[in-house]
Image (cartoon, rainbow, N blue to C red):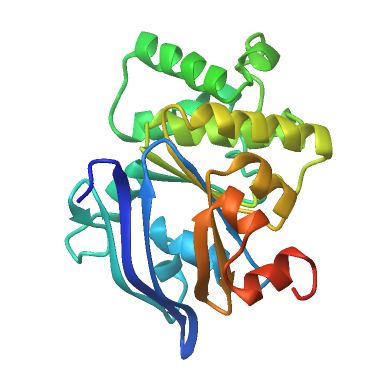
Length: 254
């Protein structure tokens, strides 16, 4: 596999019962890039992301086939541990979901504690490090023991990003991370993604095409569970090769 490739998806299919939600997606992701996924509602974007975090199969009647290779291992191999997979492929959800009844600090370090790390100085250092990466440290450094739920929506989302980064996953998935936020909070998350690219590979589902054009290096266009077109974002948004892509981008459908 090419040294630049961090995650290699091959012939990925996903079903809800008999409904074929994601159809034969093959796509490689390069290190230190932001990859946007766009397409109309209900076209399988979020389902695809949830497959890569091994959440999809937890839905009763749902199943997955195909491969997604990271560090030489197929995440769907029966021997692959979903918890291990999630350490390598972290996920930030559409709605901020700090753990309730947990402080800001505890929210960030919970993943490390679950790995058995107990050293207080290390945990504090990591909490600060990840809150800085999530552009939240200056806003919360004096109230680390306050409930994570006491933060504003935009701050909660950045807290969830800090929590995801704490276990240092090479790949970070984001499912419409700004859709529940106001424009100012959204802009902060966008700036943050551009920073995260220096250390991580980001795959982001967004319904906001301007956002995809602004922040991503590559864009994939999905319709009805199929990958219609994938290219550099600059190409997709200015010279799409497929008529369906052009129609969607210009607002003629979707």
